[in-house]
Structures are given as C-alpha cells and as structure tokens.
Image (cartoon, rainbow, N blue to C red; front, side):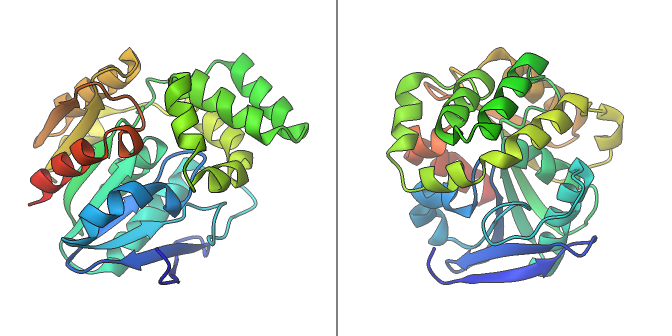
Length: 261
C-alpha cells in the first residue's frame, strides 16, 4: 500500500491515518495489537480486486496520532469515524483487538453493511497481571523483540513456527515499533466485559472467523458473539490459529470474500 494515506479526525480530535487501495465497495480494515496497516499486506491482492481498501493505523502507531489518556471507547469512536467518512454500504473487518473495536463501533454508526470479526477476545482472554508486568519490564528495558515474542506466544497463543514466519514478513518492523501500545491495551482488555444485551438489536450481518487450532478462549468468544447477535455465524478455518492472514492466506481471503459477496 504505497499510495499514501488520508486522515480522518476522530471524535476527540485525534487524527487517524487511513491507507487507500483497490477499487470497489469500501472495506475498512482494523488491525490487532502490535501492528499497523501493513499487517494486511498478504491478503491485499485478493481483497483489492473487489473492494476499495481503507486500512487504518490504529491510534498510537503508524501515521495516526494519539491522546494523553487511553481508553477503549476512543478506539471505537476512531473506527466509527472512518466508517462514516468512507461513505455508504461500508464493510468492516477487524482482527483480534481490532475486532473488539469493530464490533463496538458498529453500535455507534449505521454505516456498516457487513461485519467480519477474526478472533476478537471479547473479554474472554484475560492476560495474567504477571505477564502484563513482564511485558512492561521488557519495554522499559528496551527489549522490544523479546517483548513482542512473549506477547505473541503467551497472549496470542501462537506457536514458535508461526512467530518465526511473522518475523520474516515486512510488517515485523511495524510490530516492533508498536510494542509500546501493548501494556495499555492489555490493561484495558482485562477490564472489558462483553455485555450481550447491548448487541441484541445489532442486525448487521456478521461473520466470526475462528482458527481450528486456536486457544479455547477464542471459541468461547465466538459462541458469545453468535448467541448475542441476531444475524451472525461462525466459520472455523481448519489448521489455523490467530494469524491466518499469514499462515492460511487463501483460506482467509476466500471466507471473507464469500461472506461479503
């Protein structure tokens, strides 16, 4: 995505960078933790053939701005602002932490046509306080690489071979640059509770993508979301975990394109 970025101003005045590519109906992409818009590079060739891709740099990384205080609610507003800016009939895809933001943003705007969630933890993944402290210690010591590997292994539940694959991709440098956002997001996620009643009237067609080999917490999250939303379904991607964009690229894009068609 070399075309340059555009800026959308969120509700609190924070500028959010959006990277545009492709042609077609709008598809807003919201990446997960320790990443920026470059995280989506493996799946872009397939998605760009059908959609105008609007890939966000979430606040605090990439070309986006930040605020003095962090709250999950500001991230929901960021995504909603981009959806409203993108036009009508906007599709929305969020991964992990970005999936939580995408689902919550769908309550703030009427502009979402279809919603794809790839393993948002929805409060079911409570990172132990000891792990959060260790992540903070590594960050303070400047050990960003060790911190990132610890996060991917202990929090995201990825095996060593998948972490090594991710390390070989261009997005690894952006992940290292975003490591300072990990502790605040993990603290916020520990406090997040999925209140199913808030989503009973959310009638946006929703797909929850689940890795067949992913930790049980993501299955629990999928079941909770499916039970809460009136128009949702779960698709299991065999052999995948939390990084199917890298490890099962064609499988991932096929499921997304089939649902959004």
